Length: 194
Image 1 (cartoon, rainbow, N blue to C red):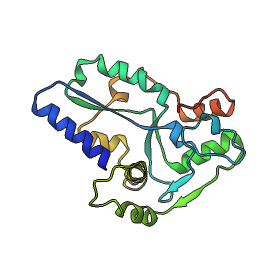
Image 2: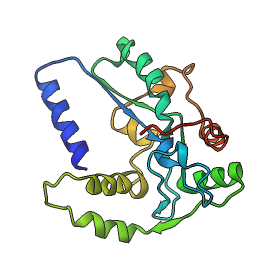
Image 3: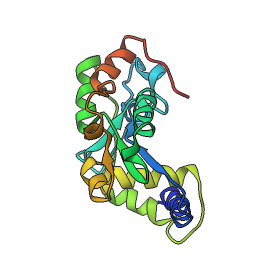
């Protein structure tokens, strides 16, 4: 992923000059995760309504409400255990199909679905291979490949890569769960983040 490579380049430089750091990665935002329903009842609370189901929709992904990022960041940067460490902050993990079921349960309306197979996505991904182009389209496709096909966006992968988990460090810090978020925007209490 081009954006991830750039971030690693910056971190490499920080480490070479012995500058203290804390890397905080967060789960995929609820606001980008919840699927649109035909009536549009959830649209006002979604950042970019997207109903693509990636590679069958069975890959788990770390998730959180963007409005909860601050509480995790406040705990992480105030903790000396996180100096020169990477930390993953997320509230829960769900597959796209589980999100689909939650939306259906809360709204009593079947979300729209556009199936995007692994092969279709790989074909789109290959058009950027070997190029230095940075674009929104490339970023979206790379993120879909990362969390939807490869399954990179999980606590298990984060731990393997040396990350600490905010959920282990701060068991008393809780973000809003996805079902509550969906219910909130269904009740027209949530608002767009962009």
